[in-house]
Image (tube, rainbow, N blue to C red; front, side, top):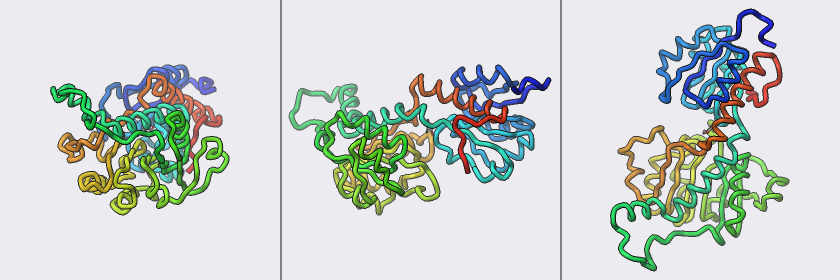
Length: 328
Ligand code: DGY
């Protein structure tokens, strides 16, 4: 146990987070925190991490060589309160012997749930419908008004069949989807069989799907993979949903695809940049629904993410196996 030494290890937490994590850390560590809802300015962060043993960060902090060096050789572990880790330079961490923890599993169902919500909001045109009610445009019940494609009998294509992609497929089962397709670097036959999903090439998924769901992690391979070439391969009526990272989409191409009718609609929980500027052309479109990166925002998930981040940190500080370590 850490407490055999007289001085406790120092942990810096980069934001106001659910109390479960800080409370746990305080049992064994000296905790300092940027206790605000807005991100810590970079300069402040660089000076705050000096001499810490552990860093509890979020997806908004760039964890690179500069930051690790600012922390110095005392730094043993970085715990990010996120499942995505494209903001962490894993090689820079490995070179300095710094372990990295993340928070898979505890947010999977919340993200899957919001993916389905976004899919429904987009395909059933809820943004237009809500605006119509609020702006007095709801004249009467009209047979042709605000119709959209339903999920029943549709083909859903999941790009990236990891934890979240699979959970989305499971959530969609009761909607009487006709065909669930997935694509990934490799087939996942056991999971696909259980879920009732079929493996296809990316091109086949794009061509066949009424709904295309981006569930891939952001990596150099997936960066801006959803570009004009891919949108051209989709059905003109297809609905594109992204709950992974804004960086997997070439956003200007997406805008053009939506305006020109290359695809039918898009639902985005993630964008580039975040926050999406209010003058973004995407926000002028009725067929684009944008949310402020809230997929994991359930009380339970965020609490569990905070606690798992703390457990990752404590395990590393105690030289124990971390519950969720990212291996470079
Ligand atoms: C993550 O964890 O990476 C999400 O984007 C936020 O929950």
